Length: 388
Image (cartoon, rainbow, N blue to C red; front, top):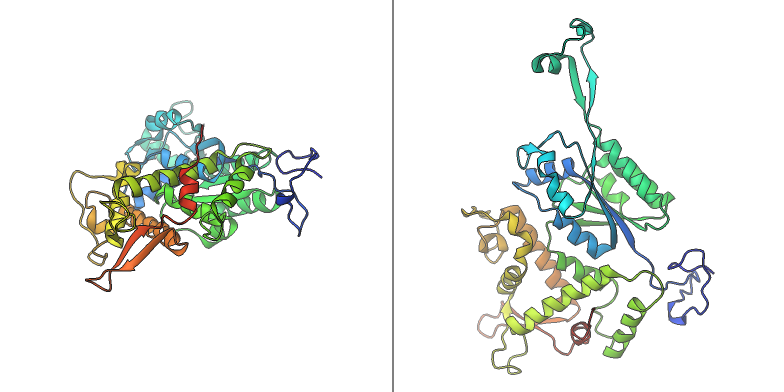
């Protein structure tokens, strides 16, 4: 039987713990090799609609590296057109994308004649700019290039994941073909949660908002693996780590990044915030949900530095008083809301699995106070990992 780690090669000694009874397929450290395809003009338009004035290419890379072993990042654009975020040509800022390792695909627009009556009236003489606009129109061809990129990369047997950064519903058919016909996992990277066509949303396996905090996705992904399940003791988790990292196949860099995110988070909550049971440490404390979100926001907000303004924004009056939008007035409101929602989702997952505990405030009974649960086996198992 062929293994998923080495397609076409028989396995000599398949470990028993990796046999799925239903299918009989051996799941030894299944490979994840992905390619990111980014439609820059669509992405820039989505960010502009949210009120952004700049874009950090690393946001997409940070998320992609948590989803899969990213092998390639492809940025598709007509570099001669103007970027609504910068009011410059995409060509003027393309060096930034190249700096972070993107493959840049320039797709020039086609020049199509729309006024046949002017054909040949000037002979070999060139048109003025005004005449050119009257006789010809530019047809954007980036959609075709994005489709070609999806088809090309999904055709490679070593690629298991396609990550698409676009809100264009025209790509739904190409995504379905990559998923259903080629067997690829497809992740849609979005700007916010709105303006996503249902045809596109339903065609993908997963939707991730790049405005969210990256560690929030790490919590979610590890929860899908059962890492936060309290019933597993420390020894069972060590065995699980051995299965994940010491099996045959490609080393799961994405999983190392997820666990490294959690190490940083737990170290901060223990060493800086002292979120431990009262009495266990001299400075142990509990925090309300608003203060906990704000403390974690202060720890992670370096990711979203490009969204800050020298002058404070006016928050939505309907926003809750403990929300990031009300607490951090120098951050773009749309970004502050995304940070608030991703932190709330992350805390909810950890509370639901009893990694974080809460109790009622003795003075204000309706207020919940949060602390880490040092008896949860996932915390020492995570902190005890060493990646070299």
